Amino acid sequence: MDKDRIKGSADQAKGAVKDTAGKILGDRKLEAEGKLDKLKGKAESAVGGAKDTLRDMARKNEEEKKH
Image 1 (cartoon, rainbow, N blue to C red):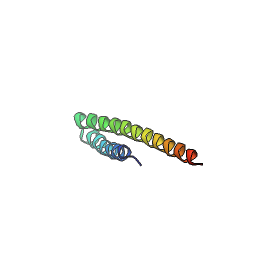
Image 2 (image 1 turned 135 degrees about the vertical axis):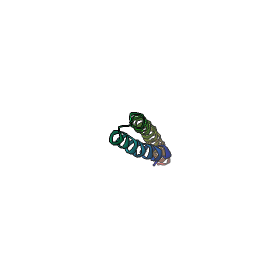
Image 3 (image 1 turned 180 degrees about the vertical axis):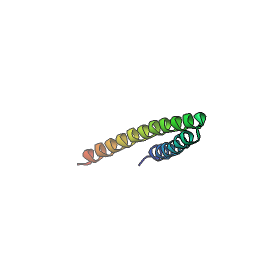
Image 4 (image 1 turned 45 degrees about the vertical axis):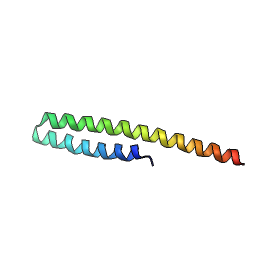
């Protein structure tokens, strides 16, 4: 698993906490920060997923060349 996916998951979790806390406390700034963190986390996860896919494809290609 790529480090971007791990960081993305952490940012999504952090964002969810901020978003929920902001809603409960009526703090629109905190809620907005949470939504932004969640979006950032989703983007990081997508980048990490793409890296994982490319890495897997490269490994598969190398293995096919050996045979």
